[in-house]
Image 1 (cartoon, rainbow, N blue to C red):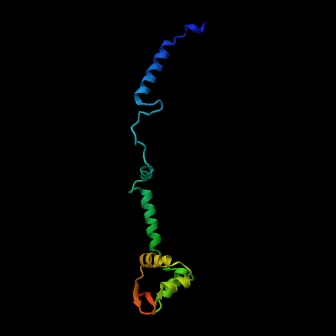
Image 2: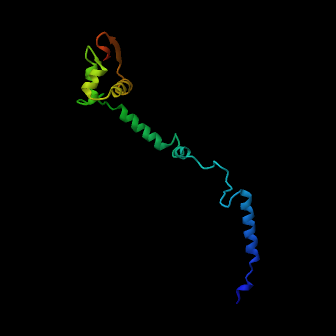
Image 3: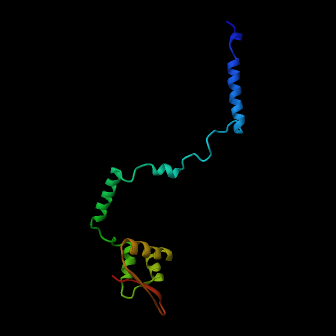
Length: 141
């Protein structure tokens, strides 16, 4: 058996056809896919679960049950409790007084009043400008 009897003409022809296709695409490693066909990570994250699926309904019901349980509006002895206590005084408190007592920065005190007290706990905070003292904040309800 000799190796010269193996047909190489078929292999050479197929190689030529592959190389001729590559030359049409521009580069040897170019893909024939259109650009931008990769799914973005946002699309992949959205396909995890349908909005009306049973698992989602169970989770929603658990959250509703948890929110309906009676719990105190805030914990005693925390910085947030001190903030509420100072704001409930008849004369209220200034941002500077709150910063000194709670040891937070001024923007954190304002954020806590806006986010935690007003939005989450539903408290009404009243503000007024007093001569010699500055702007005071007070919980009215």
